[in-house]
Image (tube, rainbow, N blue to C red; front, top):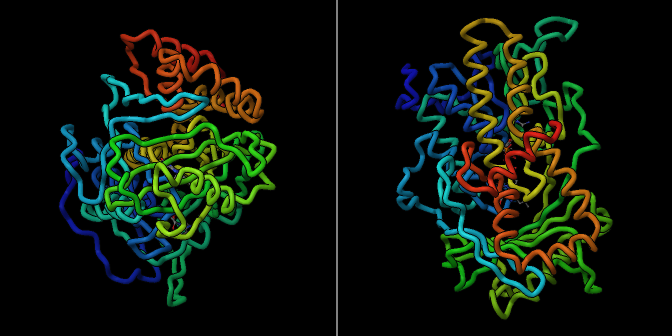
Length: 436
Ligand SMILES: Cc1cc2nc3c(=O)[nH]c(=O)nc-3n(C[C@H](O)[C@H](O)[C@H](O)COP(=O)(O)OP(=O)(O)OC[C@H]3O[C@@H](n4cnc5c(N)ncnc54)[C@H](O)[C@@H]3O)c2cc1C
């Protein structure tokens, strides 16, 4: 198989998984992280088995927002082109409209050398399947409706993994034998837990809820965020709400609260979202009659909340390693970028046959995002206080240059060799801050 990154056109087998299957790498979970890892590894010529517990198309609770960081990964995978020709089922946007205090400000995605200047939205039903099918076209053996049930060890002392066990919908069981396992099974992190890797309490978490509404405003060229999130008593909450327009005439409407907020545990996310969206109905048509889906919520693990990211031949990718950006709750790009970096490290280790080389994965990711995530943790602690949140929105929002800097910081979008002083400030802060 070619190693030129263009990807072979072999279609992965849809045959039932044999009770004992051998592979170079087995990937648990075909979300954006697992599917991207499988696509990169297959393009590098490796025999990859990708196991997904749900059959596609499957839903995933999400805001459906794809920032320029995701677009960059899609460019790397050859899924979109620079000119961002229209992709079926996707809508593209110019940037973010922020509502806060008494100000509404439109901030285009930054014009940078290192990052594309556009973002998109797509339901996870559409998006996740498209990445998984790409992996399959590149030769990864995707098996849907197959749940990974645990690690298999090479020796009784459990010093190294040698594959995973699985069960399918017909209760058939089996094993995929592989020297390297990628755990991309999402926030539940079941494989990581089976290894004894616990969630780190010193890292921020969020919970977010979302639903969909039919609306004539679904052609909005901006994604919107709302910083004035209030409870039934009108008190400011530490979190934010969003309205992301979709290609199918609906809006993805949601809100999230940080674990540092005092309301994090006690609040009913369903009620809060219903009443918040109801308050915006005049402008956005977000009435109960226009709601097209249930309100569903999910956890958002942030700032590397499971470490180490490699141990005993298992690499954690995406939510299973808690890689969501603490500033804005974005996790798709981090899962996909980690997948690409994991594939490079795994490729090296399979070539050198030195499993110790896999430790580089943890080091590379911490070096790349560790300082930023530490800043994000401080940010989460600060905005956990509603007064700080209030002062920031009330006095910060009207200041456009300040908001441009904050936007770049929160979206994690700067050039490596900056021409803009805002980038210099952000890059320096990240570099000087100890890694999470
Ligand atoms: C309400 C909400 C809104 C969000 N909004 C955004 C947003 O707008 N933009 C953004 O970038 N991020 C957003 N996020 C975060 C984003 O959804 C995640 O960070 C992202 O999905 C992580 O990708 P992943 O591949 O690591 O995990 P997942 O997308 O969770 O994929 C994991 C996959 O593994 C499968 N799986 C699980 N267990 C097993 C098993 N044992 N065996 C086999 N398969 C298994 C699952 O079925 C799933 O397909 C949001 C999260 C929430 C909760």
